Length: 318
Image 1 (cartoon, helix red, strand yellow):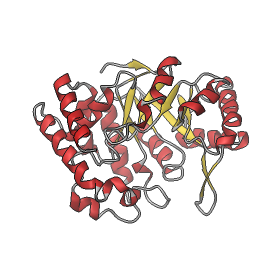
Image 2 (cartoon, helix red, strand yellow):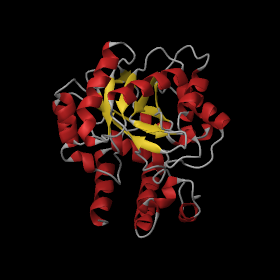
Image 3 (cartoon, one colour):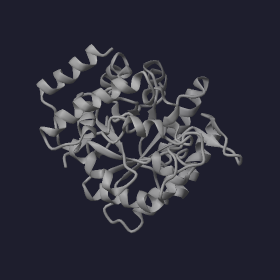
Image 4 (tube, helix red, strand yellow):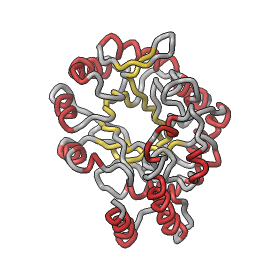
């Protein structure tokens, strides 16, 4: 599988990476509902067997549990993938999540992630959210210190806007940005992607299938039956009036995918990767059988007629 350099870093990553938000399991504010840990391990290993060479996780996913599952999945693996994780979302003994970009918090979170992941250094350490905004500079200075000390090999950010990227860049170079980007969320196209291009910042798109909505597996009935401990049950994209339009888009993706024996999810991800400013995309898998529904996007490329077909739908449904 071909790889692409991530910004100015020394990381060369496959077009798709393994996302681990959902495998954190239940019991916190941003959970995806119940999850079988054995399924999680099997899914990660199947994705690695398919050729994906990086895993993206975060301390807050399952309040540390996702990182522990990643470590379990990599135990005994000789050809280990890159491991990316994130800081800035801390929690207390009551499992209450709070944002913090204070230097001491970032350092403490880094040490905890190193222990859970069972690694000597984190390949890419990212600020999860630019919150509190007034502490961005303090947080980024500490991230640069962690890199200088060798605890992390590269530093990046997630969910930053162009102004926030500029403030961080003035302190130390940014290896990568991880923003949401999909057919249903194109906000970064206006000024964030141009900033990244100008400063050679790699772009790792998350939620290219809009949290499973564009995968082809989501139906009206399933959306209505999402459990209360699944954060998607509160997302407007999974509710009317947007749900009907989104499912119509999925049908178009299905039609395009059928021409190539691919899933709607493959097509949705391929659309994200068609943007030359996007380095790679994160695909979340909760079970090993789900890998086959997304892996096609690693090599498939939409032709111009298909891109125009999708754009025509988007323009007509606004």
